[in-house]
Image 1: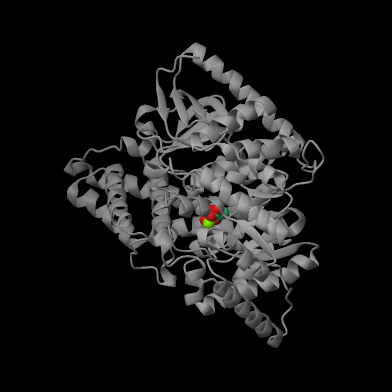
Image 2: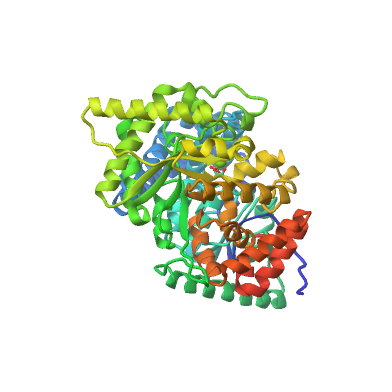
Length: 593
Ligand code: PEP
Ligand code: MG
């Protein structure tokens, strides 16, 4: 084992190993130019700020045009919004007044403004508003870069493949990253579901999040190793360590290329059993990534992202436009649409989520919230039914599923609302398709009484992220209880086994769409349980397809039988790691332990 003198630990968010040159995006905020200016310098500092503001406005306009042309009008809209923040008189007035009256330098004034905004926004639990903080940060980063040539991030000056080191990746930076070769991503903030994590995963870039203090310890130009399997980051490692990681990196990229070449190969096991490998997506870019990675459809479209990125309730036409876009980008034009899953950690102001709940994950969330907004819910149902007709006309299919179903009454109520939505569309002579009707299995009560619920649905999709947290009574986002929130826990395996068998007996198709579908150590066990349909982050599709080709069903059943005898999560993990090493040693590089 190599000696690792300077290893930092974070959350492994996107697997693989990469080594490259650090490109510190937020270096500007780590050491903001604090100083003040003398009275005689105030006028020139104000002029300096004005010049930077004009250059920033020109940048934003150019970016807006470029993105509109190369990506689309919708994607470009974010830069128009940034231009309006820049042009906001309150924003500029405060900066000018701090320079003129408090004799601050322009960068120091910007830093103060950002501190104020951060303090203000940190008191809100509103995800939509929190996202807006990213937009303000983005504008301030641009302005600051124009104020300081020394600190201006300039990827041209850096050699070799880059490792982006950032507080958290901002929307415009993500667009800009399209032009440079990014080998790895490290962020100070963030979690499995942060912006950076989602982008890294969908592009197959190794990434580690939540590395405290990394921006302070790294300078642009340093050599950085990112080990996205274990969440390790190394800064300027010695020659021996570097060459050990270079070898791992070569293996990882070789593997990725092989997988890319397998994109159009159908997913089958070693003994020829056909599998369905689908993608979980949040937007149209993810749908494109799903097609690029060889998924055969979309198994989970999280529609709440339409609402989270919209200032008011999106109307039926707007929603329909988004669904059509997704259908057009999705592999095989097949999309399983999940209705609004808001609440818990995601809130939107216009749906009345201003108050704080004591237990948001067990409270007014998901389908429970949709029932309380029957008008909004009906609008979504109509848009989905109409998108169903569109998908059919394009040779594909829409399916609809409902999150967090707990009781049979809920299913009956949703059915009734679906029927009413159909009638409304008929009255309007609007084209729609009767789409398959599914439930997400995420609540232990639904797992225990699955036989009661199955006759009322056409299909089931197991949301293991939530099912595990509810079963183990361990918040999926709380690192303090992450040792409990484990998909390989004996209780979870037993529950999944029982649900999958019940679906088989009742002849109801079943998919699993939680993170565990893409985890190499869980996958053989799910196959052993009889599961044949899996929906995962697009970047995991190639490696899971490769793993499937190494597995035969009898062997998976044996592994499952053994795993079910084991009494602790640690033992199941150990057993599956050993098995994986024997079956597909290459895949060890993809295991996020
Ligand atoms: C799940 O709970 O497993 C799931 C896929 O839904 P989400 O992660 O969006 O809650
Ligand atoms: Mg869920």
